[in-house]
Image (cartoon, rainbow, N blue to C red; front, side):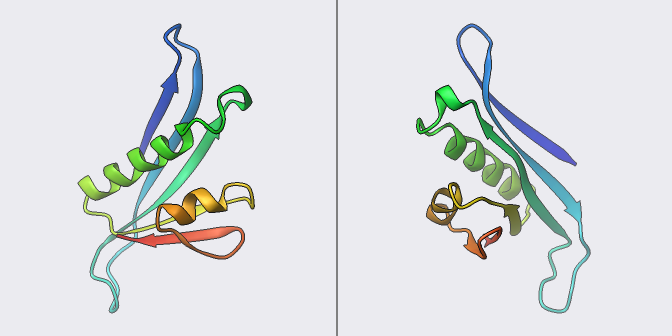
Length: 101
């Protein structure tokens, strides 16, 4: 399942977005939760960056995951975005980060 979130101007121009891909993963010995999620498609128009829109999009994804009972999330990252994701609790390598809710 994919859940998407968009930010737009009053004129309707989309200036940022983020998505959550929920996957049926299956329970494991270490984690009985059958779902995992991946935060994807995080994007902000260059003219609208550094205004909190990416943070709002990721937070919307985290809320959607919680509402669905998902406790393990991952995302791909760049060096420029790593600080944002770390501030939200994600941990990991330079290109892949995870969060356990």
